[in-house]
Amino acid sequence: MLNKLNYCPVNVQPHTKAVYKNVEQKSPDIFENNNDPFKNVSFHGRDLVSMLAEKQVDKDLKIIFEKLDGLDGDEFAQTAYKELVKYLKLEDCAPKELTFLEKEGRPIASDYKWYENKVIVYRNYFDKASKAEKLGYIAHELTHCKQTSNILKTDDPNIIKQYAIAIAMSDFNAAMSTNPQAAASLLKAKQTGKEKEYIQTMIYRQAGATYKELITIFADVLKLPKYPLNSANGQKALSDIKAQSLYNGATEQGWNNCPLEKEAMDFENFIKADYCKYTK
Ligand SMILES: [Zn+2]
Image 1 (tube, rainbow, N blue to C red):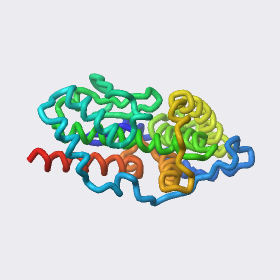
Image 2 (image 1 turned 30 degrees about the vertical axis):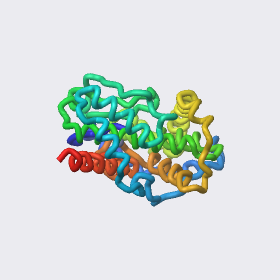
Image 3 (image 1 turned 90 degrees about the vertical axis):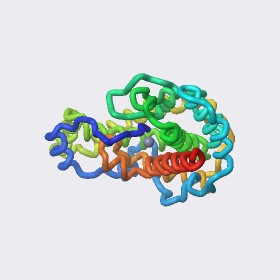
């Protein structure tokens, strides 16, 4: 997910906000409907200590920093990326290298786009950042890659469907905040008593497409050995799926409150501080 600089939400039309206020907060209970094609999928698991928070800091990071000594520019970034992929044990899931693009429309420095299998940095911000900040951006996006990898490797026949629905829900949340036509359609459905059906239709339509993308892009990852559902990793996966379903990346509050972003920010800030200490 994108790494925002000074947060600047996408342009939200005032009347969209007003419409959104009239829409009750939806919840995962829509999946308990009998017509649910993903029946038996449920959300549970929360408040788990993240893998990264458990890690002690860390002689392995110091070894990475030593390898970066004397490197600059793209070579610094690519080397840092590859070393952090190894550090996070993501060799079997992360894109092979960092992708550089000139800029995005929004004020963001980096993004993990799993559906393109890319970790992207945007030169207009990234190139001006300090080395510590660059490490932080890369660590942030790889944390999201780790979250995804952990979900994909969890041993539950419904896990990919759950994840696809959760992604569709967060996309829906964002659309309600940014797309006046979508918000107006939802309000119309609400006025005719068809709100639940409307939300369900929109989310399942998107979830079906997302499910196909996930099983195609991560076909190889899905063949790897799995974590039992009741292991710490499995429970973290369920917790992360729930967080994804409630995520609204189009609002500052949604971004700040999302546990997936908090974990990524924790690792970003941690590695930045550690690198500053190393270079002092
Ligand atoms: Zn993020």
